[in-house]
Amino acid sequence: MKLSYTSFASFALLVGVIFAMSQVGVSGWVDPSDLTKKLPSSGLEVGFYHKRCPDKKIDIQGIIEHIVTQHFYNDRTTLPAFLRMQFHDCFVKGCDASILIYGSSSERNAAANAGVREYDFLDDLKAKVESICPDTVSCADLIAIATATVLKLGGGPNYPVQTGRRDGSRSNAADVKLPRPSVSVPESYEFFKAKGFTLEEMVALLGCHTVGIAHCGTFQNRLYPDNTEYDSAMDEALRWQLIAKCPPSKTSTEAVLLDQGGGGYSNYYTDDKFDVSFFQQILRQRGVLTIDQALARDPSTASIVASFANNPGLFNAKLGQAMVKLQAVDVLTGLDGNIRKVCSKFNY
Image 1 (cartoon, helix red, strand yellow):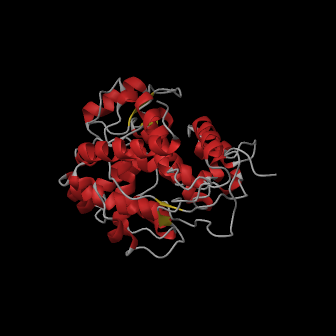
Image 2 (image 1 turned 60 degrees about the vertical axis):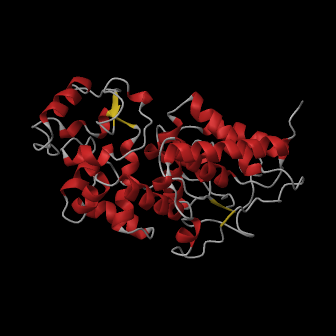
Image 3 (image 1 turned 120 degrees about the horizontal axis):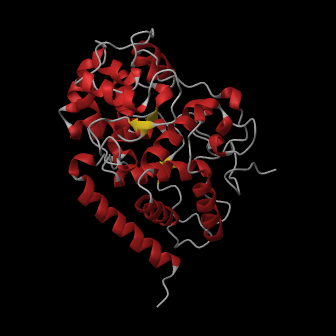
């Protein structure tokens, strides 16, 4: 018997909820009412797409989550990939999917966005969504739903995704001004504070470095004494591991795990476990990036790091709140923006 889109979506959503509960547990769930009452109104809402498709019975968000879930199990690196895309999109001109636009001078070609990926997947996902529910779901919402889905599947917080974003009509590489990996905690906080985040929320969001990788060029200067960024307090065992990957006097294309307590030093592409290991590692002076290690040393953030390292439930709860807030940064809603037909192209 052939499943209708309605029955398919309902089944997919049910399986997703059951799986999420078994993987994340009660400590990972973030109560929707607890989140929304703490946030200023953004025009977004949980369940925005309910009965908005031409066929009112289609659960389009459930279908999107099902497709993303299949993609995650085919490629676990989608977890850090979507987390990075979400952050890099929202912290430029707001969560408007401007990072997805293809072009020689668009945001995706800015130096800070080198290595951001999943563009092709989102174009394919958008095409499937358009065939089922045309002119309804924004690309900005696709990023938000995909990010929340893979984060939950990886063991992170299970938070309710607010939807109703619309897509932007500007994408300029010159607009991309993101903090470098070598910034200090005060410098980083100035950046986050400008977007409305607290110090605790900044630490929670940077805790997403419990998954993903860093290339040699982002931390190599910390390894050698003749460099002004040399970190003499780095764990010596880690230093020698990193030197083996990133020898002096040349720029290596090698990459290492951001979380050195993760899935094996040489097997970084399979490190998809979202946990508090990152915080435990930086407390042991085993942070790879300057800003990551600085979180455990700076007096303003050291106690936050320690509290997260010792309490996974607290970290998941705080990160869930921070993610809802992140996905609401400078969003376009109502009559602002538009709904793109293709995520990588403006509707011209």
